[in-house]
Image (cartoon, rainbow, N blue to C red):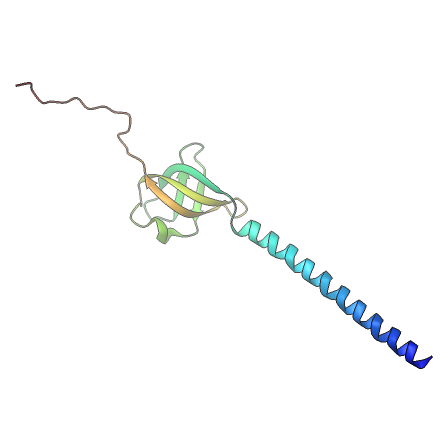
Length: 118
């Protein structure tokens, strides 16, 4: 009888330990998923202007202004009209720029050829 009680107690201990391990790992997985989803929101392409100090970006479409999380990645584009691909962090009003492309200021304007026929 004592052996049966000891075996059942040990078995119950292992069952409870295994269940507790599964619960904490599923909680950790849920925490990791929520952290990764807020860490890198989907990429958006936005046209606008980088401020002269390179710390903010103002969108052409609605005039919305964001703080740049990585101003070192837009160095050399300060004050320029650009198109950025960026992760938009709406909760902190920040952009994490992934790619910057200059927008031609004279796009759409055609120039006439001045060469004369010979």
